[in-house]
Image (cartoon, rainbow, N blue to C red; front, side, top):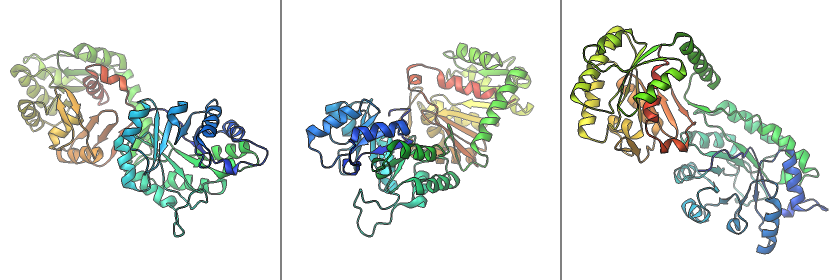
Length: 441
């Protein structure tokens, strides 16, 4: 999946609409000056040679998506129809660094596209449009249908561009309706425009007017699902919590594995806390009562360390100290899973933090699994998994991965801040679990 593509104002070309006296490359250049961020070269009546010449000219200005000759001109990607090659085939031909978009006419097609790794989808036409024949009885997806589509794929990190009959006179209504009515935090990312720009006497002016409207699409990095608080309130609270940590420098008692002790200690200091890694049976209870939080990470299991987990967890509960529990590799062996379930039933856990394989193992869900300390496979309905497990355990569940899912059983949020580089180091998940503990002061 290609990150950081801007499809806020997505131009779809049609040379038949270009005003007399202008060329398509001229119109595209003007549109880009007005605010177009992305171009799909869609020329139905060109021969291959002419198509390639236009593509090479337009490619000088902006990222372009081309349906038919992407490979020949080294386009930035391809936009597929439902009757074209599959997403997997397109990736195998174009490579991993090209943008793959696809038209999704139903919610099911959108979900399939997300699972196949599409970078974005184009919606079914919002309104009937002369640029595409959908049949005489076609009424369009409409603003209500667009919201329904967005809610159906809220759990996926895939962009959505609305298309079909959009222009200055109706786009604002679509933006306003989606901003107010999306239920699971996912909004559309941009509008695809054909005639309102290509056929305009002044493409730059038309693009600028449309760009001003798409700029009002509400987007944030933190996406909420059934959240009672607006996104900015959540972000504000995180900032306030960081300030409290720096002011109070809380003692974090971390019972963790050999591999990450140093990383966790440095992470604690960096964010403003004070680290402690005391596993000795003679002092673990005392530290648990004076710490701001106890973090229990079962990475390095042994009989003696197991005893320290039980003692530390029970002492923390008695003292009212929050406990973060990281069930490292919970599904890798029967012994680990049995230990995790025993610990969870022995004391109150404030936050259960694990990857998809670990959380799935504890919940008894299929899909993801543990391969050593790593997670393999995927969870089809992650928001449902974390929400149900949080309700079952009466705790907060944090499932980390490319997208993080956090739920207290009533409210669920997803964080889209993953980085591919984290796959190449060990201990990042354990360090996150340790950092979570600092916020419970």
